[in-house]
Image (tube, rainbow, N blue to C red):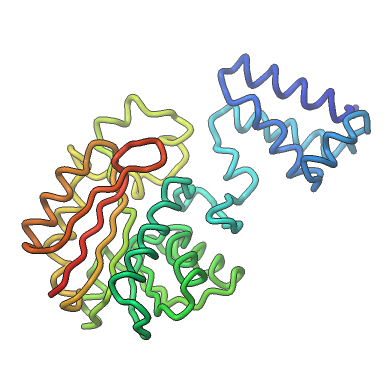
Length: 287
């Protein structure tokens, strides 16, 4: 039995509201399964859905009700105006991370002016959202991206190929592969795991049961990875360099303190995101 578009949307909206999920997900999923734009979908509300589309849509709504993020069902997420493929081996790119890109590009331009041949590394690249975007926004950059997860690297490579970004991908734990290579970089950017393990109990199961824990949690206070960075960064940075981190809410002071100890004299800045929460820390190291 099939349904008209408006009937399918009404059913999904009531069902999701009753299950305390976002009722707007229905429209996103129906657009995905019909291939229609929002305008087309809304102009054809009285059209019948093909039975196979209705079944696939219904199944997807039930999946989301069980906690599967809509981005994993659709298989993609928009980031900085581009579509990135996502799956359960990678974190879903967040809008806040777009601000890390923006802040990085601004600082690269002001620190290095029009210097060519700059080398940048994105540590823990996941879907490749940061490394691919930086390469496409500033094509003269030479970009390396690392991740500990083989499955994440495969996703990132596929996104880079699909979007036309030439990036060197390296498997390894944090900065270890860069240290082994002996290369030095002008910029190191990272959105590492930063959630305290204890926060897991209060988080939505949409995140904790479906997104990779390797990319989410970092010890009792969420700062484990930043501490490791401080030991390893001096081994891979050029004398003049930029470091940019995404951080968790309330971690700005602690992370900037770690950077001050590792790089006395560096210009360190905590930057709030669009919601007024501390979200990024940048260190401009002048050598």
